Length: 70
Image 1 (spheres, rainbow, N blue to C red):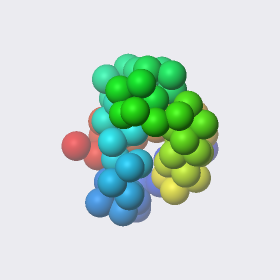
Image 2 (image 1 turned 90 degrees about the vertical axis):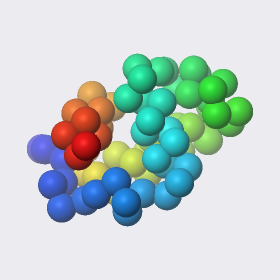
Image 3 (image 1 turned 120 degrees about the horizontal axis):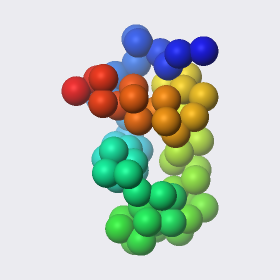
Image 4 (image 1 turned 45 degrees about the vertical axis):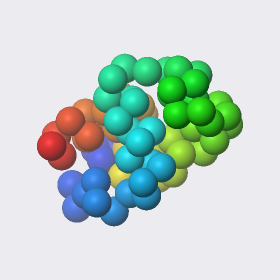
């Protein structure tokens, strides 16, 4: 199932956008947590929210969605 094409970056929270930016750099959840000074669990929570909001099924789909939205 593809990600939602009706959903836009502007509908994400500021924290979700920061996590997504780190994902675009190829960072793991652990690296994102270190870069943003968050716990790994907080990053996992933001990732889950991003996947739910966009309808993406994986980090790879989420990354492709993010790159396609630019």
